[in-house]
Length: 131
Image (cartoon, rainbow, N blue to C red; front, side, top):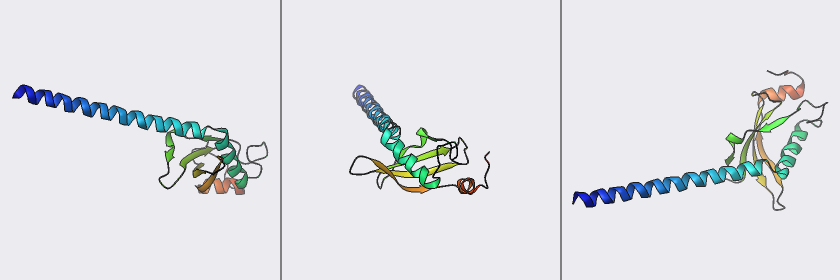
């Protein structure tokens, strides 16, 4: 009797560990897919178009927004639609923009919603000078 319980216990533990491994592999695959989307040319176009709406001279020597980078560890699928993305502007941790980017039927992306920090508003108005 004890031997059969031990065998059943071993089978249960083995099954749970296989299920856990496949769950984490699935999560890893989703994360890699989001990173590929975030690094795609279409996503770059969408983000830069958004930044140029904030600052028409963004990403040029005359612009207040000089650089940006996507925080890959903060990427998440939005349950409503699209991907939640955070970007850091000018390498300043106070200038983090949260945005929801969705895919259009054409396959291109656009920023559907965003949240900007007060410091970014001040930078664009010439009242914020960085870290």
